[in-house]
Amino acid sequence: MLRIQTMRMAAVHRSSSKPHQINDMSGNGNNWGSNLYPSYPPSHSPRASIDPMNQDSDHGYAAGAGTGYTPVVDQGPSYNSEPAVDSGPMWSASNEKPRSGGNKKWYILGGVLVLVAVIVGVAVGVATHKKSSSSSSSSGSSSSSSGGGGSGGGSGGTGSTAGWTMSANNVVQYNPKDLSQFTKDPRLHPSFYGVAYSPAGSILPTCGATFAQVLEDVYLLSQLTTRVRLYGTDCNATELVIDAIQRTKTNLSVYVGIYIDSDDSVYQRQRNETEYIIQTYGTDQIIGFTVGNEFILDNLTALGSQDPTSSAGIAAAEFLVAKITDFRAMLASLSLKKTIPVGNGDAGSYTNVQLLSAVDYFMGNIHPWFGNVAVDQAAGWTWQFWQTNNVALAAQTPNHPQTIIAEVGWPSGSNDTASDSDGPSLANIPTLQTFIDDWVCPSNSNGTEYFWFEFFDEEWKAVTYGGVEGFWGIFDSTKQLKNVTIPTCTSN
Image (cartoon, rainbow, N blue to C red; front, side):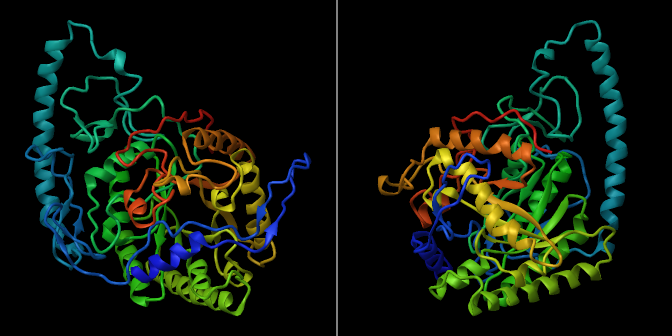
């Protein structure tokens, strides 16, 4: 971990010696001047190359891949836990995955409990109807902000929220007996094409991700977008997200991240966990597998290079291609009913023809802040950078992979005044709002596919890296919406 962090810190603070002027495609002749290889932030979900199996006494699961988040058949609400959920995920300390044949008793027990619940529910429903049919509802005024599921999903209804509970950070109220019912925040709109997200507590070796926290995140994410980019499978992060999406019936799909570094065991662990997730949850919520994040950037930075077409850049690409080929073989062995694209993610200028020729899509992290761009020029600069470094290069390959902006955003603060400016602009709420306004709706209109970076402020980044690294979220670290206005335009 220390080696990885040190290398990425160097990537943040290095400066390019290649200034590059980019002309405005609109014909206005504006220069969004920056450089061809702007400095990029560290990888936003690094994983250590070790896999300690530390039991978490607070949450009851082990930290490593395939070690313990074991969903069970719905068994009714958990009245003895707080907060209660409809089927209460179970965490196990065992390293062994459950065998499908061993779950029969749960299906039998679940069927009995469901039958009992139906009988009780009918009786209660009749009694409640008799009691309330002669009086008008006093909860109808709250129907605009409660009772429905997330964007495109969940169950409707405008009934009372009596008996509902608050989410982990007290920002969403939901029905513990039906997780598809939750209150909506009128300030949120499904404006973003996608959002980059890592659950809190998804970094080895400490871990700590919980279903309650992820459930809250899914409720909020579903009101902003229909697509989520994930970074890795460690600490049960991907499994928790997919489980929460299925339980809430929200209209969210994910790009699953498979993190890679030079230690092959890291890839093997994440590949095996992904295979288990597919076998357990299916693929309905999965729209892509991103094998590797900023791998070429990290390797070249360690060698003091910035050229992805160098021998070192090509060697890194070939390493990635071998992993991508292996991952595709794993998918083929599962005989899936649909073909799911397999791609790669890296800093926007750190890819090459060798890699692009082997993927279905490439995700480029493009941050105008690290390109020292003024905020009022940042949107145009980002789009042009993507066109020049990703779209044009992909067109040179025989397979013409899809290109997506994997990370784009603007920081709202800094740990210190020395880092609160990229030169021409500050990191604060007004500049964040400017970039949201300049980027989101125009990108939706012109069909740019992007993931806003990021969902919420991650405190571990502020501690580990300092500067602006912990201040990129739409929400703060306690899931409070920052003082920004979310656009009302809708992304396809």
